Image (tube, rainbow, N blue to C red; front, side):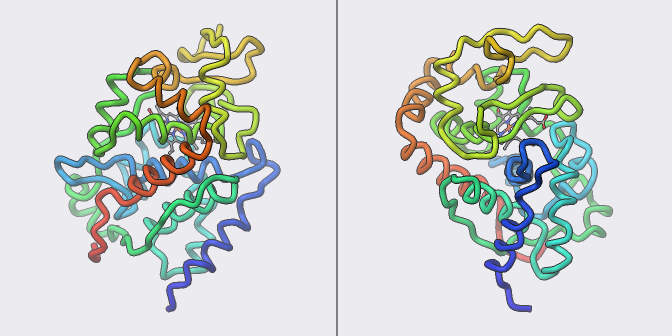
Length: 271
Ligand code: CCH
């Protein structure tokens, strides 16, 4: 069948608006799916990454870090059924870039050609083809941990700050990560608001029984400990200041870093 990615893009755009879901858009959870599918990459062993779409299988599907992404995968399933030629690995990553653009974000360069690990192979050799749990970042930790995780993928400090700006989108859910609330006032729009809020709000610890997180004085917006690390760490902070001032620079650097992330470990050989 002809590989008409534009037809798939159109079908992704068509499902984004969903009034009864969170803030009315599936965009944020689709961006999180694209990132978690890719963010398992380990540059030393050249394992993990979006190729293979291994989040369909255990243990990756049941990694606590991926809680809630079963919804994102289910929302995309009708599009996979309609365009069976596209791999899940391509569909999940494409959905992320289409969602970012549709939510007023930058155009992220994207190329198809990923393939899916066949279920039989995943069953026969899970340890060989599925990345172990624990490769995605733990929001309760700090700067050293974020560096360990993103350096492992091949990113630097500036990339880390640029990629974190995706938290202008979406929200935390107590039944997924345990954290609660949105980072910005417009969680369905891609913007540099996250950086401005990080710098300008009087963040304080939320008073509750849940995991440690930070809230604004009205307890409407939130930041994770890993978000706060970006202004507490003297090497990260100048990039937060740059992106708070310069939306164009953020869009450009985010698009480049996110495109790189979606390519990590992608070989374009049939799996
Ligand atoms: Fe994130 N993120 N993220 N994040 N994330 C969460 C939600 C989103 C961390 C932790 C969390 C990136 C980096 C990090 C999105 C995109 C990106 C949640 C809440 C936690 C916790 C999950 C829930 O409860 O539903 C940590 C830690 C890091 C790095 O240290 C990067 C990089 C990206 C993309 C480029 C998006 C979008 C969401 C919102 C999802 C939604 O459902 O609204």
